[in-house]
Amino acid sequence: MKNFNHKIPIQVRFKDLDDMGHVNNANHLSYIELARVKYFQEVFDIGTDWNKQDGLILARVEMDFRKPIFFNDKVSVYTRCSRIGKKSFDLNFLIVKETILNSNNSSEEITTEILAEGKTVLACYDYIERKAIEIPEERKRIINEYEGQVIPDGKN
Image (cartoon, rainbow, N blue to C red):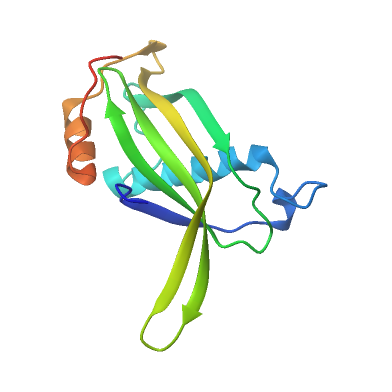
């Protein structure tokens, strides 16, 4: 979880489970969507609507499933921006199970286990013109400030 400044807890709901008794893989995308929205709220102090001429659109999603999530698991999603390009940027996600091993009055020993990891590519998008646009410099500055400097790759 090193290098991840953003973390949100996830409530695993009974409806998330499939016939095998674990969280269905489609719900992982809902979990990272929630984390993405909370990331924008925290980093930019805004919700999902930047505005129609300076918006965001999801361009790509990757997800590697490592271990199943079960109903009583204590799950969190860690988020970080790993790349900023000219028109798009990457958000990486870790879906993590946290288990308290020892708890006493002075401290807790917690283990973490990565259950899934993923990446989304988000493009800045003009919904009126229906085309990708360059990421505003102010937005890049805010992300870099929050993350502690994201190295641009020169790609879109």
